[in-house]
Amino acid sequence: TIDVAHKYFTTPRRKFIITDAPGHVQYTRNMVTGASNADLAIVLVDARQGVIEQTRRHTLLASLLGIRYFVLAVNKMDLVGNDEAVFQRIKTDYEAIAEQLRLPHVMAIPLSALNGDNVVRHSPSLPWYGGPSLLQHLESVPTVADANPHEPRFQVQYVIRPQTEALPDYRGYAGRIQSGIYKVGDKVRIQPSGLETSIEAIEINQQAVPSAEAPQAVVLRLRDDIDISRGDAIVPVHTHPAVVRELEATLCWMDERPLRAGRKLLVQHHAALVKASVTAILQKTNIETFASVGTEEAKLNDIVRVRLKTALPLVADAYRANRATGAFILVDEQTGNTLAAGLVQATDPEYFTQEVPVEAVFSI
Image (cartoon, rainbow, N blue to C red; front, side, top):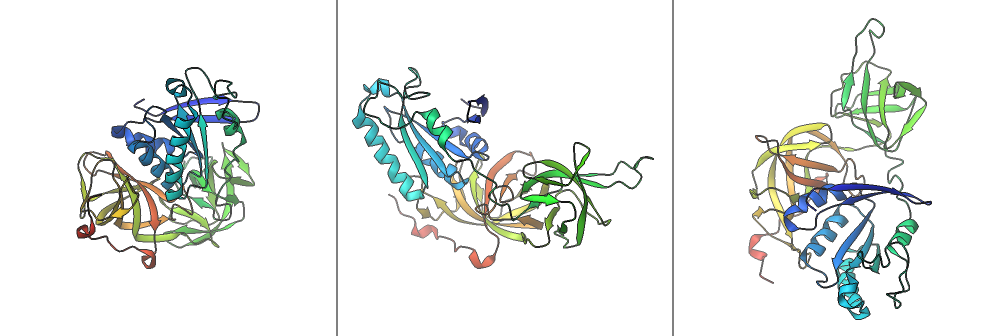
């Protein structure tokens, strides 16, 4: 696998979307793309190889991306004689990773995709395994509800002003509700301007509705004529997303050219696109130990924590609080290429971290 592939299937209990992401290290960027909207990660391990560096890297990335449910799928058990000792050794190795990363839910399943063992049904070829098959487990995992029902977020993607004879004064704001529920009559604040108004109408497919919720695509119409542009946020007055020009974020660096402090680039935060610079590379995650170490640069596939400064205010939340508004990408100003996937870690300077000095790094 090189590109990210999506497969759809349905069982009597659930509908599934499987995102098949590549395992090779040079395609880590594709894995990040595929995992960004996932609720569960199936970490596929070859029974002959066991836990390898990419197993650790992909698990770390999935954890950073907010995935709470993990399946360790130990495949090709037929090639190791369906040996329970091999499975238990791999399971123990992975449990150590899960403990380090504090993964809340992990299920290890031995299987053979070639023979269909433990994929859909429990297999007699692995009589020592008493747990569920892969599909049985997937059907039993709790569904992930909107994590922010009380923190509605909506970012304007497009301002609709037809200015026709039939609709001379129509002004609508199109976008996707990122979290929570919006209702007609809600008092809202426009960020970053801070102006307040209320929702006059909500439309879905040109039909008026009394309310809408994430992740529906809607058009909001407001009671007052306010200057609102693409990338602005419309939020209830009782919520307080951060409006910042400086933040800390975790990056998965995706470019062949290393990142160094002082690099100028663009932050693409959904519909908002602003100029920015990396003012400091604070630390890098050692994939072998998951320890934070000092570094002067980020190389391809490195996971680093950085400090960013933007030319214009961004309306954002910490990723742990809101997966939608806490995610962004970094874009090259000249080529338009994606340089990194970013997760907002801190928007308040009180919670900024100290840079780990490079001198403190030692070889393991």
